[in-house]
Image 1 (cartoon, rainbow, N blue to C red):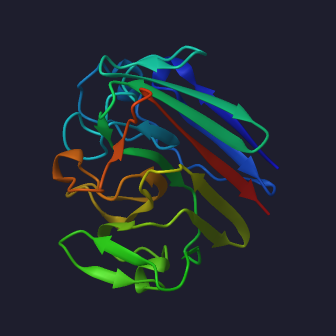
Image 2: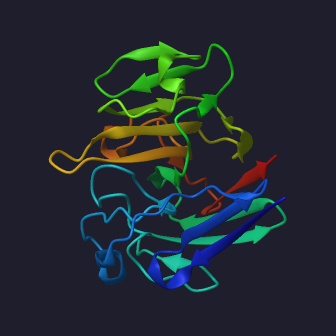
Length: 238
């Protein structure tokens, strides 16, 4: 069983994800996170941020993380997003004009040891920053120790992954009719320049690219004719 906590006033951010006797989310104390406004540059405080309608690009890390939420969700102008948690599952509902395209990521930054490994189905393809495509398992699956690198990758058409770090944390994403992937941000003290730190992101997502502006056919989620798009993220730890 896992338990969660949210900070609705500051972007609906997940501030805790506990299971198997440990806290899984990494945090970075930055006071600037408390005063952000829509369209501000992203402030990396850790936890799990809801990144939508893009991750990279404009607005930086999306429009939802920088707005206050209510129990009913958040209104971002072009769309309204709601999220409910029950048992081990977060259920999402997005309302927008039919045909609206978006990328969403559960931008989870995890507190992991140097021995942590990302497990994904064998043969899964991963798009790596710079354009390379690699097949899983890959050396990128080792999530430490720190080596001064920072790499982003997307495991395309991958609905489930497990982080093995003594205990095991599993994400399973269910979104019928939408492209389902997992983003990996493997920052082993390689970013930012001048003051690098360690942050490991394992991010279930709708879409196949980080930046919505770069999405080709099939690379983004699309709101159907009903004007409503729904998906579920199941989280378990053992």
